[in-house]
Image (cartoon, rainbow, N blue to C red; front, side, top):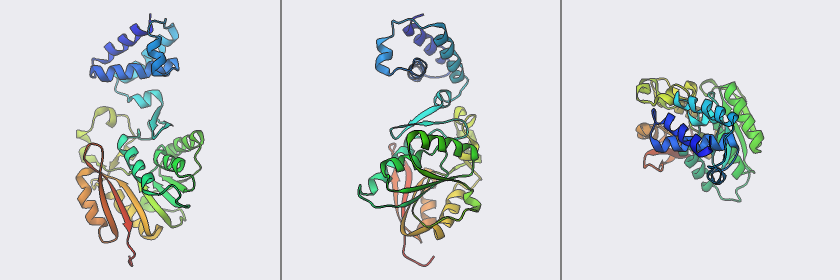
Length: 284
């Protein structure tokens, strides 16, 4: 079987559960992964013969996609801010909106900014912490997560990508670690309420870690605990950066308003997705 024919077969099998364009994209990603080639070489080799191992491997991976497993979990990696991150069902798949958050942070600080203490709360795959560290090597970055499985993934990513991060396992709801005051806190915490589960896509609900997705039926539950932590562990004039549930943006602003100068930021789709705050110089 030629590679082009194999590609068409993968697409046809996927078309029962997804649109043509998505199926074609997935087929190309599987072929590039299995053949270990880039997009240009894939198209240059469409007329080449696909051996039995290639066909068998592609079909096995394709069956996982058809069953609803996200492409990134099937491949075992996702690209984020120019780096390849290992992902598995113990961590969320990094989203483009979170890349926007990282981009806003690194642009906010001048290239010659001196050393800063940064805390990433709920680090997951480590994509935020590692990406910031790679662009701002003078920053001292600490990354916290409650999940030991997630931290194993994050530590692997930091080692492979080459970022020196201080990882700690702790729960922001009841922090046990003795931590310093930080110049910056960043977090993309769980903000989907359990009551919203019915509105979620099955491939997300059935595959991504609920610990990292869901909050109790208070969408601001983790934000409140992070802000409580920030009372003692964020320096005056320090910054706090949140990815947020657009529907809860103004409720969170009301919660932060007394203690922070706040800016609400939109994502590429025009949704209220990020909040940037500077801690006021007041007695909390």
